[in-house]
Image (cartoon, rainbow, N blue to C red; front, side, top):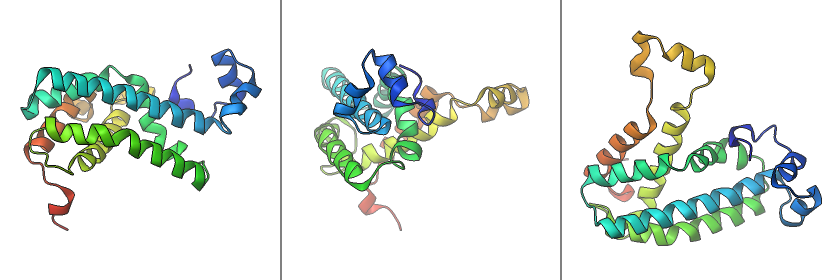
Amino acid sequence: MPGCGGVVDLTMSRLAQEAGLAKGTLYLYFDTKEQIFLALVLDELHRWTAGLLADLSARQEREPERVAAHLARTLVARPRLLRLLGVLHPILERNLPPEVLLAFKLDLAALLDGPATALEAHLPGLAPGDGPAFLRRLHAVIVGLSLSSRPSPALAAVLDRPELSVMRVDFATELQAVVAALLRGWRPARDAPP
């Protein structure tokens, strides 16, 4: 399947061709290409959270640095999920009607409910009810770091200059550091200062 970064230019015809289907077959299940990508987001998130929770349960990791390292490793192994999350808000969710968005957000909330509760049991400092807030914050960090760690070719060439080395973002390294700091200093949203 083509890279998710080109969602804007991708057509239903091209998607059907890439999937080896007739275009009409896609329209039996999806009204727009954005809906196809929303389904992929849900599928990728389901696969990632299922694997993550199984690993965390088996390893019984509790130290923030170890949990953060594990989260980073599992996300680096899912480049499609990272690309999809990068286009979710700026492209996919901006081009759909409210009823489609409502259905997607309800499916997303249902999909993340179990993992959010399980993360509360596995992540240091999280109390009951903190799982959804942790996942929201993790999502924001993932999207920001993922996008900034994949610069355009022109920007990558600029960032290769030695004096700009501090501007380069290594996704796994930065994600691990931010998640470890988040877990060490966890404060639920309800306790955060205004």
